[in-house]
Length: 268
Image 1 (tube, rainbow, N blue to C red):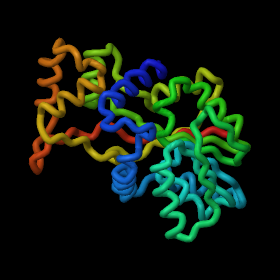
Image 2 (spheres, one colour):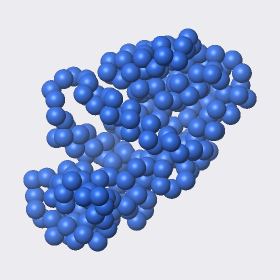
Image 3 (spheres, rainbow, N blue to C red):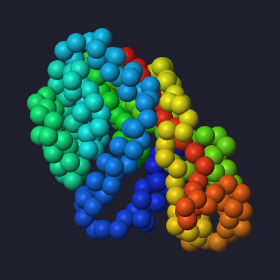
């Protein structure tokens, strides 16, 4: 199922791509960084957990897969001997470089690469925070994490609510509650790989609500996520669903909260 959901999501992203550059984040990296800053204004158990693991293992090294603008790398750098921030986007890397220089950090190495394709030397801890969704082969992604880590692997994934608007829409259109790769699918895949991880769930409501400027925009986005842009077959049901659940606030159509994050941890 992971591969199928990955294909649906990648098609949705492809249709919304505004620019032709190879670097998807070239024009979006700073906006992305701001969004993560807003999410991180609230405390969460995942950050506390990872910091404690590093405190319990002084001198440890950490690989941050899909590091982006470096929120996790910067967070753990005071507690790690070395952090390797792996990311394919030069736009993302540029923001991280600015922050490293501004904060005077000297133990973060930035590496250009894509996981699991590119080689990275062994690290004590290997972290992948929401960086696996675009990779069709989840098993290869997780297997290489296990092979690269000498102590433990940590994944953070979105865990959609069973009664969310997207879940209801997905059940109606796709016959199952998921429109994209997520924790539920990944967890079952790990069990099938003979990996039995610990799980920590963040408190509900940590993901910002989706907003749209118009009802039509919300419907178009929903159809894009479900890969049904070319048909009106489901429009009546989806329109009714949105009318029941979206609220109008400050001239924006606001979705109810639909996701929280799950931390998945296994030792190697």
